[in-house]
Image (cartoon, rainbow, N blue to C red; front, side):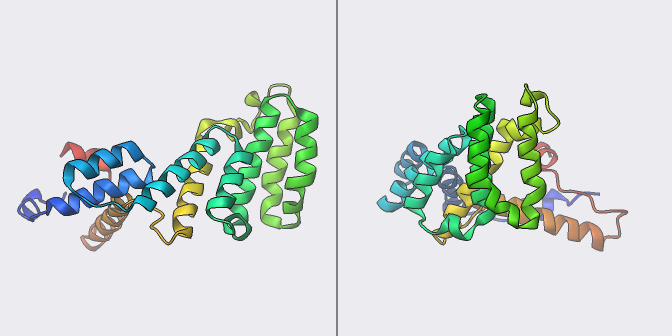
Length: 215
């Protein structure tokens, strides 16, 4: 049994609220040109310095996504000077991207030297030991993309690190780490789960955005 649409179809939604949700998504994902067009079309105001920071975040995001971690780290240190010093997990993930790029380029000697100088200090902390072992194991394979750790070489892994970096930079600037639409979906999922539990359903039915959009 789903929630009857008649219970919410007549709830009025202001255009300005919808515009703010759309703008939040565009800014979060660094769609600068689209933001400028959207602001012009809707008459909304967007501070100029916000657009400047968005362009910087966009460059950082794409460098991380491309696996160019040294450049992503350099720009991050300029935009958010103490971020990586405080967020060791993120710093490790970025350094690991560079290690992976060296391995994929078959620069194994350089990769080993990089691991010894930049990654090995993380080995003093237990939670990084297993991760380090997985990355170092890539050196044992002539074709690392066919190793059991192949996922570390994937675009999905780089996307994960780039997304985490983007959220961290936003949080560093006291901005939401997730866009408004993401937070709405998260909150909707929790509310739906609580409703299902209160209605006594067997198990908790996960909220499906795909199914909701079809309804």
